[in-house]
Length: 579
Image (cartoon, rainbow, N blue to C red; front, side, top):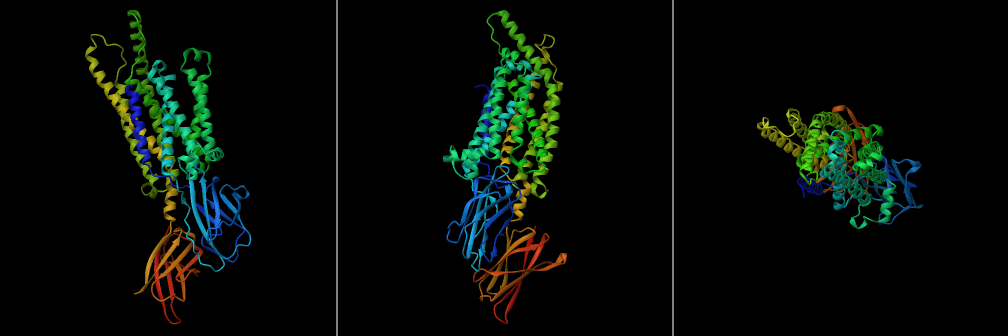
């Protein structure tokens, strides 16, 4: 095994370990409203239950089910998108449902192919709100499937990156097509891209459904995957990779290439299509306008594969030599001349590659900034969310690549183009070899960092955008406990902890059983309130209210009045942070 192959194998092993240690993906779509609302108390059972999300969601690999307090299903039929609205999910209920608590649980696929799960509860009549519910969030995912999917993403990015580097041998360095190491590199990239796409397709169904490797070839999941956007794009990518394989066969076979003059143009068009299948999936699915997000992501990916793919090609070229066969002295002289011509052509193309690389760096900086701001949204999300932290990590690595590229550029521009040195020039051989050695080390470091960048990108795909993660953090229920008397206290919870329509829950712990509990909410610093909180008794010491409008963010003071007899009452103030 040559040095280039060992290098690529080592990088693959390193990134596979890192990706297996990556965290599981989190949900991206969020429930913005429901009918009935979570925690609502209704006089009679509704005819349907409807959930509304902040983006389009899919039901092919999910469900919406309603059960009563005993766990018996009370939904009728299958869930669907009411009036064809992809952001809503609805299911009908059986008729003549009695009083009691009902739980609606759901699992859907967000627009960027990640599973979302949660539940809500509502009460019919005067029963207690007895079943707990979970807000919209990360759906349970098999950890092995999640890690394998991340590795598949990395294989796809690495494969298309290696393929992208082949532009050098079809433009600046045509003689590179004669090197077996370069041809192996191109076909290795094609193979990795195919394996990555196949892996992503097979794993998407179990990932979205929350199942394990045993369902990898389940026909129902495969069929469902074909009906979602991610599966259709992956299918298209595999078709395009097949066409690209045919075009590369023609391009790398000189006799066949002369007969098929259209092969270079066809390959370029197919590569553009492959890039779009990457850019049209993932987070761009939920952006508006989508075409702009796809365009920015496409430019970012093209710049990446042109730059990093070119670096890998140059590294393999620096570690290997053209070795034409020779059987006699005349052919040996011809072989040596061919090697010198190959080296001279590569050296002449290096300054041009350096300028193209600078353009790629500028493109990556601009499109990366647009992507980061689009996905992160606020400065707080940079350091407080995993997505923001991964973006920071990529920025640091990118800065390192730019610095290394600067040194490589200087080495390229200062290195004269030479063939075999004459006796008079022999004293220059050692400095040139030293320069070539530094260039090799720089390229090796750049390629290694680039592989880690691709690994971080593969993990980013499975993470919720920073603005979504931050909103989820801020909308989690907030609770605080305050003392009522020396022997009793009250726990007050607001859910979600974001301004708008919210629910309140109050639990009285210890002391004399209250005869009534009332509450109001206010923000004294903004001269807002008091806003009545219509609490209802859900049990002996539990009180809830839903649909309370908190119009602004801030520190809301909830004033509780706990009545224990006709003449005795206690007042306490709980302060809750609402974003």
